[in-house]
Length: 267
Image (tube, rainbow, N blue to C red; front, side):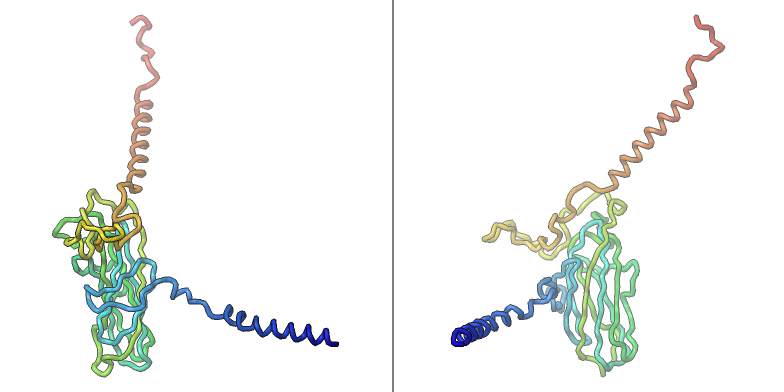
């Protein structure tokens, strides 16, 4: 009996010691949204725009009447697709929201398609906006308003609002994706530098890590407009081969079988 009591006391002590460890292991882990590194706030101007990488979904809280700004990189051959969702308060009157996209020179870019401006009816829980830009070109004339490689700014705000709804809390979600158009959008030319903030005052000095202290590093891992290769070269090569085969076939059809039969052999 004494041995049984000793074993029971030992097992009880082991269970009490292991209890906190199990509870510690069962603590909730950080959510995927926290680990993704997506921004959770927005800037209030072009200078303070929050950087957003393509494929991330940014969130921000604000008030009706505020201007919310984000910035993202876009390279040549990409066609950015900007989407935004604004969650409105429970009680509100009709209000119109708008999303605008500006390039590195702060020129407003037109949308190919998508509802960049929408009116939320009274009591609507949310409003969704979208703007599919034109394909980013590698080069353009100075007078043109074509989208060029560099940083782009997204501005979200309400453009038609009653005084009673001014200052009410709202939350926004913004996501930028892009489709690689490929060689069909390639042009004969490229920019010397991308249109990014600080490129005009970039310094050749390096920091302690040996990296150039410029802002143009905000972009793709492979660099801006990396490489000269596009699938246009593939189709050009295929077209050249087909043209050569057509020339050989035409020559074979028109040259005949050789010496005309009416000509004597000794002629």
